[in-house]
Image (cartoon, rainbow, N blue to C red; front, side, top):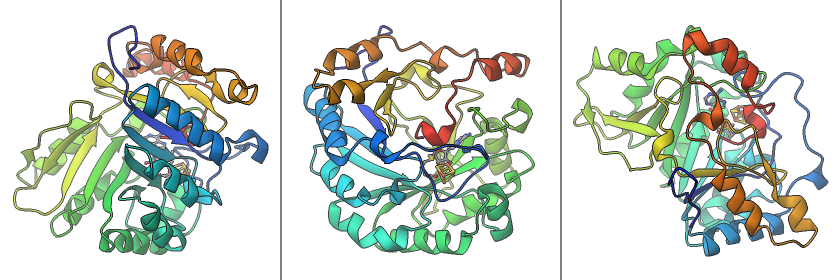
Amino acid sequence: MLTDRHGRTHRSLRISIVDKCDLRCAYCMPEDQHFLRREELMTRAEIGSIARLFVERYGVNKIRLTGGEPLVRPDAVDIVRDMAALPVNLGLTTNALTLHRHLDGLIDAGLRSLNVSLDTFDAERFRTITRRDGYDTVWSNIQAAHARGLRVKLNMVVMRGVNDDEILRFVELTRDLDMHVRFIEFMPFAGNHWGRERVYTYAEMLGHIGSVHSVEKLTDDPHSTAKAYRVPGWKGTFAVISTVTEPFCGTCDRLRITAEGRMRNCLFAREETDLLSALRRGEDIAPLVEANVLAKHAMLGGLPPFKPEKQEEVLHDLSERPMVAIGG
Ligand code: SAM
Ligand code: SF4
């Protein structure tokens, strides 16, 4: 088991398989982002051997593949197949821009659950947020994945003055579709122009939704980062993710590996452990993994709380990595 010095046991692993992306969301990727060279990325075999260590030795039972955009990697489907062979609950997070090319392969490889980012239902606004065209393709790919029987969760990053006016439209989706929509507070990462005033809080989200619909609280998984709800009688569900205004670090069980094989024990971590170089030198990486987990901070990777009066401190202390190079 991987237990940290605060007594939390970690069973969930996010693996970023590539840092590149075919969209350039302003809240995630800085304009001048440089990407890793191919030889710097973990190979398929290296991803497999790191994942097996976490699963077989440490009891990790949940793996999510992410990026950057995982589907820009040519062997993404093969990696999904490798992970699906492990005794884990497997998920993939994607922007769905090229999902039509990979859907059959992913299902055949054993994928059953997909998280897709979608921040707007307006094509023009999609272009502003992602700095690329693609709304129609993304939305039709989401519908196709759902129609093929995949469990689909939609992730919407809610930003004040950008897309907060679409929250009810997203909730409306759950009337007839058994999708799960997650409203995420805008989080600070390197180069993403975060400001506390741009955070539309989870309390505001719930207040806004509750002013129009009656909502029923659902039971959350003990390690869930999300607080789940449903409009009674509707097919789908929704949740709010309150990382900024009400962090859930006390029950966090997540660990992360970046595309170049560095281990991070928190989304906001400033310390990383280079597993890949050690693996390539033929060393046992288990002691590195254990030391990394043990060092996990109690909250937010050691950052101060995201209070308005702490904003300057937060921005000063952020890790140098933008979200695109961490893997959400
Ligand atoms: N490219 C894939 C995608 O967009 O789903 C996977 C990688 S992306 C980094 C993973 C998730 O992080 C997405 O759901 C995205 O919306 C979320 N994310 C990125 N930057 C964020 C931010 N500043 N605040 C909150 N969520 C963010
Ligand atoms: Fe790419 Fe996903 Fe980041 Fe958008 S959120 S830039 S799609 S990695």
